Amino acid sequence: MYDPKTVCLLDDAPDARVVHVVDNAASIAAWLGPAEKYVRENGFGGRTGEVALVPGESGVDSAVIVVSSEHRHDPLAFAALATTLPPGPWRLSFDGYDAARVALLAHDAVLGFCMEAYAYRVRTREAAPVRLVLPDGTDDAVTMARAIWLGRDLINMPANHLGPAELASLARDALAPFGAETSILTGAAVTAAYPCLAAVGAGSDRSAHVVMSRWQGSGATADAPLISLVGKGVCFDTGGYDIKPSAGMLRMKKDMGGAALMLAVAMVAMARDLPVRLELRLGCVENSISGHAMRPGDVLSTRAGLNVEIGNTDAEGRLVLCDLLTEACEASPDLLLDAATLTGAARVALGPDLPALFGTDDLVCEMLLEAGRVVGDDLWRLPLWYGYDAWLDRKIADVGNVAEKPMAGAITAALFLRRFVKPQINWAHIDTYAWNDASRPGRPAGGETLALRAISQFLLRFIK
Image 1 (cartoon, rainbow, N blue to C red):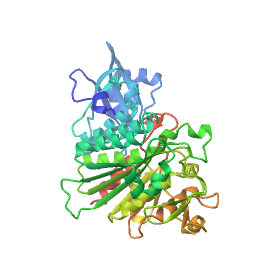
Image 2 (cartoon, rainbow, N blue to C red; image 1 turned 30 degrees about the horizontal axis):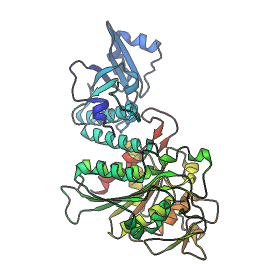
Image 3 (cartoon, rainbow, N blue to C red; image 1 turned 90 degrees about the horizontal axis):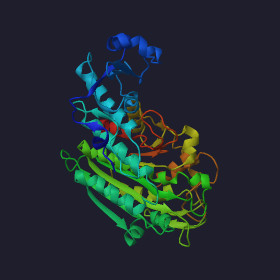
Image 4 (cartoon, rainbow, N blue to C red; image 1 turned 30 degrees about the vertical axis):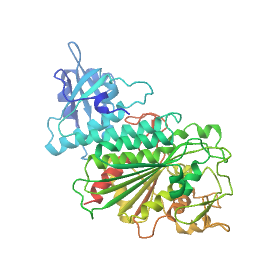
């Protein structure tokens, strides 16, 4: 795992050149000076996120970046700095802004720069050619960047490097600096406590692992809000006996993206020392094929006592989550939040950029959606439409893991999970893609922690 502070950030550099942050035509002209005609003739249009390099006697003397004049978070507006500036150290100048605006812009600049500077490397990662001097008061932006980098690294990691054991171990290591008490269960302990989850991992030579981590903020009392996070960590998904076509398996190393996201959320909450009690559960498995693998038509036991008939072995993520959700409810959390790369149906409905949000409380869901809008990390709510719940009923078991009708797959998957959540629990479920199909500013192709910034912003408000 790599830390952006060692790769692309600097505490100081006396020889750093200056990037002037501007948001209007007058400021652009003032900072470009005599070079304005030159940079405009070379294509600079003064659009948000655009960088102009200002020539001097010995090369590029300084730079100008244009940001939106709206007072909202927009870290992606700063992404181009990491790839447009010439090599060397750079510092930001926020002349003309009040203190509140500077704080917002500085935070977004550091975060957007780091989001763009990220690159996954199996080999040793060297320092980036462009380095940014950290403005004062941007520790929280560095915290978020670290969590994003960790989540992306885990999702991008090849499956032969990241199996259930490795994912569990890396999660424990990531939380240890915050004083979290983390245990890792495997073998008979997993089978006894999480029988359905264990059945998913039974087909692989790499045994299932469950991460259970507890943490309490320094300002949290015994009756502080209990936040419970649950993540799907399927390190590789063949589809089992309902095997995926070869094209469908190409990105299945990302099927642990829900676990990476929830781990990143936990890291941010701990680094911010939120006054909460926090529980994190990650189900780390591999869905493979062997004589021990579950089959279509099998009936599995669950921690909740319900029996599940397997209609499709490729709908395994909900089987991983159901036991973890059941256990999480036993502690009566104030908020239960899970994340998973759960259904292709959510992607058909919303595409790759918008995680689907389901929830039992309208206020909490609206708070999550609003948090996403504030930080530019949007989600979209889909309904827990109970009219489809009967599609999961079975004659020989309590519930099927897939619906009998080939429609509303994301909704019926969420309804399946809902059966394992106590009615009085405030629960939200996020069905995410966890991937960028192509590179865009601040979002390089590969693993992505979609909704991390939204959830982290939401938690700040939820605990007030």
